[in-house]
Amino acid sequence: MSAKTDLRSLSRSELKSLMPKLGLAAFRGEQIFDWAQKRAAASINELTNLSAADQKKLAAACYLALPVLIKKDVAANGDTAKLLLELADGERIETAIMFYSGKDSRDRVTCCVSTQTGCVMGCKFCATAQYQKCRNLTAGEIVSQVQMADKAAKELGSKGLTNLVYMGMGEPMLNLAQVKKSIELLNDERGLNIGQRKIAVSTCGLPKQIRQMADWKMQIHLAISLHAANDELRRNLMPAAARYPLQELLAAADYYQAQTGRRVCYEYALFKDINDRPEAARSLGKLLDGRGALINLIPANPLPETGFMPSDDETVKHFSRLLSLYNVEVQIRQERGRDINAACGQLRKRTLEV
Ligand code: SF4
Image (cartoon, rainbow, N blue to C red; front, top):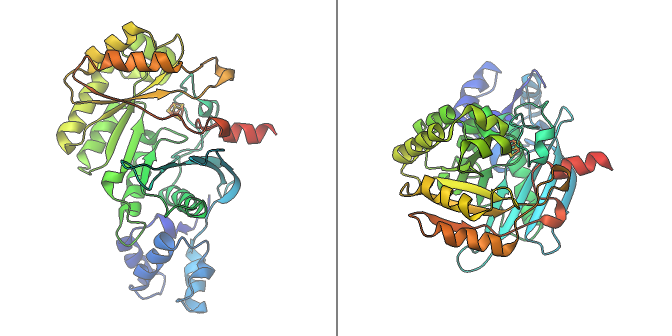
């Protein structure tokens, strides 16, 4: 990583106080923020309202860079796209874009954001889990990833991104400071101006960090990857979850809901013959009954190398019907991007293999 300062990682006030230290007028900070955040400048040379002398002073201590687009895959039906991006140190990350249309979700374009270059959580069903040696992304790298996705979304005919979900490669709660900073940058009205209510952070469930996030008092959504309603099965599916018993996790989720007034979403990927039996649905219903929870049932993407296969449609529908007997709201997420390896980590793996 460069010893220089990434201008895309800095807030407007940080930029304004940095400028005099570099011999530039403080008001340049606002201009640079505009270039770095709104206009997605790829280098300091693009900052054409700065003199050559000021560009030189800036470049001596700072930099601006965008990731390199290595690959862009678009699903045959056009509803999903996936980008493979290379960062300055050669690490590669994936970013997915999902296009929604219809009267309830007209023009919604959601970006699935990566926060690390791999993941140490070791979920058994996840292609990213094989990249245990990984590093955290900086706030600037997270923002630049979103900017690349926004550009790609526009090139594919939309008006650009409307929603973000931090659920690509990596566990956001293990990179909480940079996640928070990136949300503040992306939410800034002088930047991409993505509303807090259009942003969700998805975690496999780290109670301490969920409580920290609750204390931000932001209006962002929290999604928890549950995938099992008892500790034993959850440990088998998500080994890192063994450190956080379900009761501790749910207490933290209740705290988040109480502090922010935002309903917590529980993600439940259905794997054939593993967690899709009627008794699993009843256990899940009992666990979340009366918590004001939204349960998102996800027909999993097949990952033959891990042995996990998706449940069939009828099983998913029956699971949903059983859950609706409890005081919870249930929705079945539409399956997407199977033909472009949409599960996180799959595109990077496939690209390494060819
Ligand atoms: S599912 Fe998420 S938390 Fe689990 S290994 Fe994959 S990227 Fe990490």
